[in-house]
Length: 446
Image 1 (cartoon, helix red, strand yellow):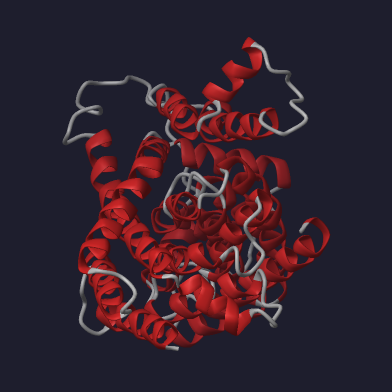
Image 2: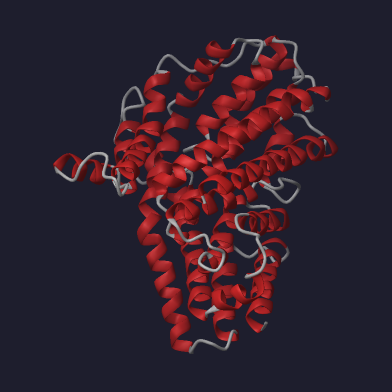
């Protein structure tokens, strides 16, 4: 039991270090990795150092460029005005009266490459103005936007969290994209229904400025909706094609065509192609945009933190793996049937305790990676579902220790009480529905 107790102590330390002591997650995860490795008693000091180095380097080597490329795509989509173009296209499809549905859909699409905090800041003026124009409470459109953003932010690559978890666990990114898309659509519907059935009962009037103004429009220099969506969906399509190509049945054969599809569907290659498409979004691409202080430089700085935290999560996971904790857990969980629920519950506990979905995802991936064989979740499909389950757990719940909670409440004129009633309960509903969907899928395909 020493290893299990030490693991629990390590997790509690990570939570307290990042919340109470205000340590950077990089430090908290690295200290936990060394602390667990030294204290477990089954590894030499040299093995602990080797495990940390291998886990850190191996994880960053597999997903570092993917996270960086996804962040660059998101930055260009945000700054070029493409996000607003997608919003306008969604409104034309669903109609002005269906503002919550439009906000949920555009949030779902925009948050694939854009961080949900940024996405909400960009799109909240649109939600306010359209709510006023349609004479709807701001609560319903704001929560629909928030939950739409969360659905893909936590479950669909190339969002950094799911990419990081896939790298730590060793899951096929194409399968993660596929199952993440399936489950996130179910979560999106649950979030939209919550917005129109529950949030709509809370009356929040848009501010006076929004009532007198039309909805903000993308500038004339902004790219079209089609051009805006290409850098998002082309990489996803290529990654999915590669996964299909490499099925045992070889649906594309084994010749040059299959080799080419396998190459361009590599996540690094696919996302770099998406980056080059993103470079076409501004009306005029300048050298300043590509410089260290321009759009690319800003994206690199934003991605660097996540890459480093991910590497430390991989180091923690490698130490756990090499300590032999999988055998210990198998002895204690062998008779239980937690299966896909275990990663969900661990991620939910970490998210609720310390607030960051990304930290919850990365930490949980490091914890469960060495346990997958013991839980019977070591097939390619099972690993992909585990990544999505971790993402679903990282939604539960958004409250006062989560920066996104304050972004949503402050920009939507919600009181803290309304925030807990709508944002916190909404993320609980969305994450819970996603977990149930995953459990049902697991019963069918595992």
